[in-house]
Length: 137
Image (cartoon, rainbow, N blue to C red; front, side, top):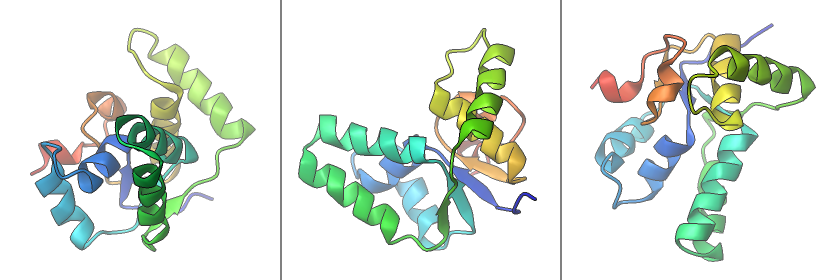
């Protein structure tokens, strides 16, 4: 049975929160100051780690992982064969969009966890009707 979670957190939100130079940093800094229950995927964690590794260095990438470990309200949902299959179906359903596997897993997790909003700057994460927090300001 799915857990009710208030928001799904995408890579772009975590990057914006951690990187002060990001346009959306003030918004996500405010949101993360008093967050509801949150869910994300291991693919998002990997994308964020890779982004900091490529953009900055190993130290920043490890700091990113440490930041996530310090977020008790953030649950990293396991992704197995069932979630990958559901994501593949979403990729086929939205084949006219440039969705990544990470995006499709996120869309699936939002449905499975009955999330109320999506913390992302990527419009693709709104395809299934979950409102993006950047439009709710």
